[in-house]
Each structure stands twice: as structure tokens, then as C-alpha cells.
Length: 69
Image 1 (cartoon, one colour):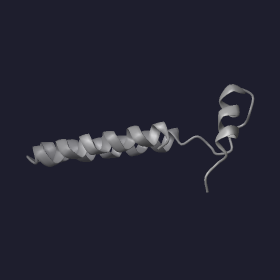
Image 2: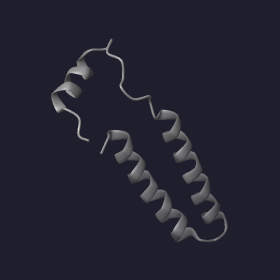
Image 3: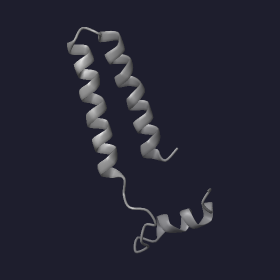
């Protein structure tokens, strides 16, 4: 469910507050690496349009995931 926005805002200014969820940075890096490798393989196999579209789409998704949308 949705988190209280004020509590989220308070946590941003309190560096000592523990995070409620573990950091997803490792998962984000793994997803980005696998996606980039797959799209690079598609480009290497001659499917340049599909590989490029995959890279652009995955970059947008990862960017939105990183900023929390």
C-alpha cells in the first residue's frame, strides 16, 4: 500500500534512520547488465532495430525504477 508521504520526507532528512526495505541496488545493476547483454547480442546477430529499441526501452524503465516511480 501507499506509504505516508510525510514519513518518507522525514526519513530523507534523518541520515540515522534505518531503511525499511533493503537496498535494491544489486538487483538494479543485475537487471541492467542482463538487459544490456541481451540487447547487445541482438545487435550482434543483425537485429539492430530490435536491439536498439530494447536498449532504449530498458533504459527508460530502469531510470523510472531508480527514481521510484
